[in-house]
Image 1 (cartoon, chains in turn green, red):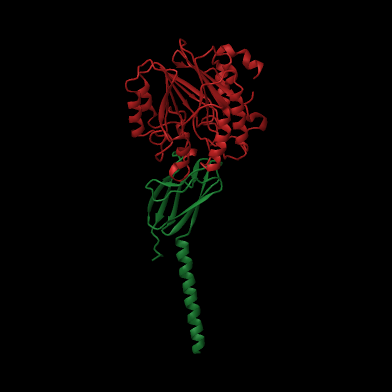
Image 2 (spheres, rainbow over the protein chains, first blue to last red):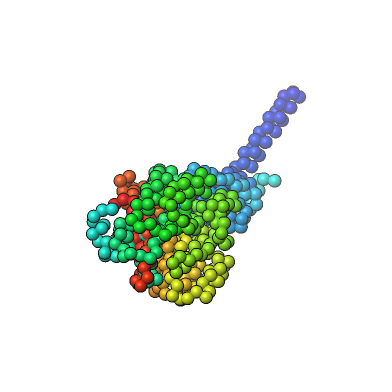
Length: 116
Length: 314
């Protein structure tokens, strides 16, 4: 009995851990954005705090992903190059391509209540 | 050179020629300065029609060495063709200007390849940077190659045969949502540079992004370009030469003539004619009619500076 209880509680603990991990991960799910035709897509991306956003350049021309507050700045991304940034703090982050500054977009980071 | 082009060589910049220019992506433009005003003669074939000139120089632009996409997988080859065209000119030009985007990604080998090919023209070359020439960390390579005697991000001026040439940089510190940018420091330098110059001094300004707004939606303009033009308005003859848009566009406003050159690398669409300004893939046999060089002639006593846009072919 005792050993069985112990096994059960271990199982429950594992399940709980998995659930916490699952929801924790889900709430800070990573996201991708695309650069094509001199445009960031989506133009407004919403993620939870802790999420990593990855931009991939699918254009024939290099672009950058540059925060208007200099929080992040990619190198020039050639075709098929990617850049990632992890947003730890909630807020609204505007960014643009420093080579083609008419290209602008926004990442909205919402609080992640599941995370510590 | 084709006979058909030669036959209208006395027509100056005919409407047909201008319309042709608008469809070209670039070889080079040949300029002549006549009586203080640069006059476009058209693409290089037409340059042969120019009267004996005092000063002739060439403009090439947007060689994008390192670009390898379908719109032109061989940009070294088309640059070599452009330089061959330069060497074949019957009268040797005084010098050449390159209005930026020498390289595609600012890699050392790209600068080296560009220099290897361009130096074969055997001419002095005055460069200004495009945004593609400042992609390396610290923007060092362009400066090491071309900017050691320049001010700020690479601006400078020089004189040739009584004409004052000004190379400007409008590809740094670009603001989100904005266009090309000269900035306060450069505008102040420009004002100082022009101070004391006689209004009769012919002025040629060259920069990568057009100083006038060609098409704002695609960023084809310079936010504070009008402030530079304001400083130049008192001069009787001002010619503004730009690249960036990979096609010929011309505009005259008072004493100021604006002209953009074809690229040697790949064509870009006419403003608003495509979803984005990205490279245009044309049939292989058409590409060389869209790439070219520009020749400019200056002749004292004539009213305009002659600009000849010359495609690599056709």
